[in-house]
Image (cartoon, rainbow, N blue to C red; front, side, top):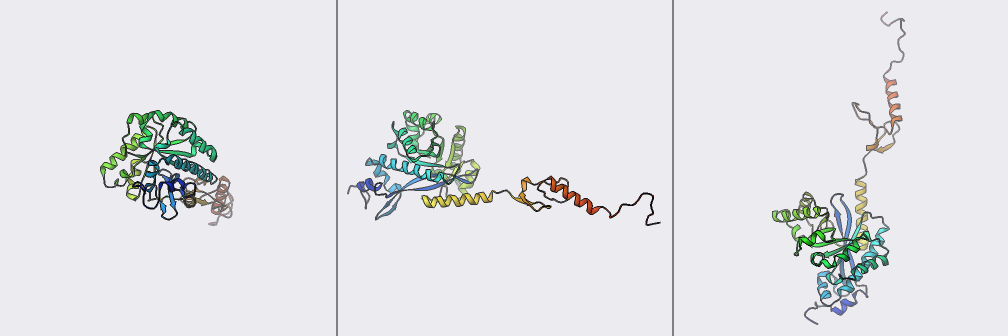
Length: 329
């Protein structure tokens, strides 16, 4: 076994992992802070090794890159993510988008055609796919920008992952096809205590918004960090505070339950018409102005009936006859 191969498995085993269905994708939700709902997810690769169990990408992707396996593995990831997103479309998760990581070795002149083919094979509309690129890939080679532009033209979005950890050129930032900046977790973890992190994150958010980009903060693990990100105007967040990456079936249940809870919480308050007892949305109820206490009516008809009853209740049983005898007589 070479020094570059971890104990317990080899590059040859990794090459066969996709064929043996040992590779799988886990999904981590990305929460829209303005609406409080899950608006997208990131697909994250895992290797379920037959003897070592579930391996994170950091345990095997470096060797995959050095051994030339990333194009093959990356193609499988892209195809599987598109197929899974197509299955989720049947659940009417709108708006919703799935982000897929792409390595530098996958990006080249044929990359655009590979993405279009994956979308076609899965029957997935392009607007439901977001490609995540490392900062060096996203901004490093302007000659590849036309390939990205051709994909953006059909609806694919692009995100710069781990922003702030590379050496981005601001000149490239203004002309690249990136639609989302993902702030690296190294700047997020200390937001509550480190004024420098807050200054950097706040500046990145302002810069991105000025360029028409959305901002996602990665690695959000504490309520204190979340509070600061809200104050700074971050668009969306991702991290263990909300959920860890999970298999597709678990993710489906997680999102469905969360969306149901939010829908129930967001249902408008109701009131009961005091005449016909019909339950109606409070904002649609008819309420007379100037009343000493509030009564709600489903419409003008019930309001007029209520007024007629009130008038009848306050009138005397018989009106006095003009010129007739009075009780004092």
